[in-house]
Length: 261
Image (cartoon, rainbow, N blue to C red; front, top):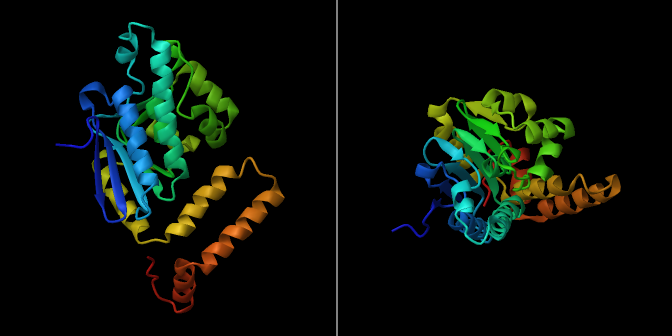
């Protein structure tokens, strides 16, 4: 029996794979999935052996976002339910963003609402050709969550963010690539293989250097130039003193492929 009700988790060496597993409900995020996503993200963040985590959805949807049927079923009102749901989702997103391991999101089909927000948290976002992206929040009388108001202006600018959030227009995978929301679009049949190949590549890469890239970029817009320069100096110094740094430099000078821990 799976240790989770609403997602699948597999780990092989330094790679973890998470699959949202409610295909019959378009991988809609209810209280159980939200809670389990927070748990599994924390598990990944706390595991020093991991170098890369992949995240995708089972079936034809990446995720249709918050489960509106579950919200409507709350007899005491949806507000408290939605608040706790958002808090779990936000805990998961924070863990994914701040963990040392890289996150690759494999967007298979529709990513809507919180599913859209979750998809773009990836350090690399790979979309299948049939993927589409829509905010959809205001259509249901809701405002965005899942970090959308943080990530989208930084990724695509204020005007395009306003367009997406206020009009609920849907972007095709190709449009999402043009706008800078995803890194690559691949044929649907090749999505899993492409993401697996990337995961294997990062699994033999320099964990601390990649983690430092994440940390530097996460705070770059909130630091002034001198603060960011100081952070860069501290991070590159720590990398140079690490086993990966020693190996990387030696391999470069020796014109050989490095072997990182």
